[in-house]
Length: 294
Ligand code: HMG
Ligand code: MG
Image (cartoon, rainbow, N blue to C red; front, side, top):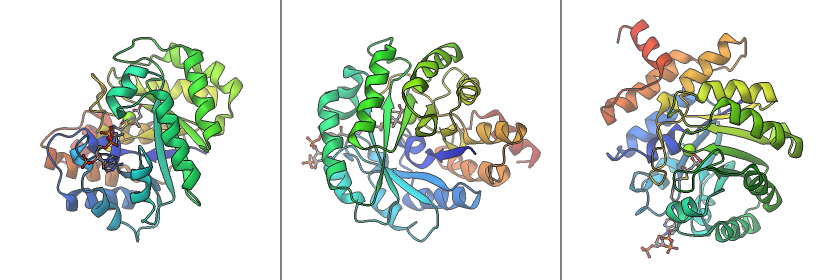
């Protein structure tokens, strides 16, 4: 059983400089849901000055309340949690990193302070599940190499703070299969494989190869973004996430049932690319568009 987390509406859209109208974001989420995605990170409640694209998150979340899927949002602090807690959500994601420099750039605090913020959130959250992201696991654009010890310490801290699952972020798409293999070999000695997710960005076209390595090591949870949208505005060089189309097509080829309709998924992301006036870099997205004669 493979669990897929769609992060397109949050990680995907947060990196778009042109503001995407709220109704288009809502339509995107509804289309992803219709395509069969059942775990969707729908927005983030962050400082709107930091990420203007997410400034309409409340309206987005309010308008998809009735849809029956596992809904999560990303929050950086108690203020974000207080806004999130007014809605009918299943989960919130919190985030920290292995890199002090990235932490300051992304969230204006030290790693230690980011743990304090997470602790404040966990202390007041009641029924919501808390998912933890650990960024820059395979390298940082500001600090370079990241040691395995720092990664293991970060994962341990997130679990101790109360996260039920930790997603390992290859924030700038720097990971290579050899490194994924060696890191996961050690990480999965310390932590259960069913609580570790992989979050690859596809900057170097290696995201799917990294998925193969992760699957072989026993990981079963993957984050991806429709059309390969995405990146982090505070991570120099971050490009799109692993495209959900590429991941789903690969899994179907391996005989894994996902319940996702690839054509509907491709059309869902294509609708957003019409707004951004960009093209998806996902090979499978392009192939399906050609097959549809679009
Ligand atoms: P700060 O400026 O240090 O915060 O931001 P502050 O407490 O000094 O507040 C400044 C202003 O922000 C105040 O408003 C607050 O009310 C407001 P003002 O008085 O100026 O009008 N504020 C908020 N407003 C709405 N929601 C909030 C919130 N918090 C403060 N939650 C903060 C600190 C962390 C908030 C800011 O730096 C921030 O929002 N950073 C988020 C950056 C971000 O979203 N990055 C991308 C997500 S992480 C990612 O993409 C990586 C990931 O995908 C995994 C991977 O790829 O590795 C997850
Ligand atoms: Mg990301």
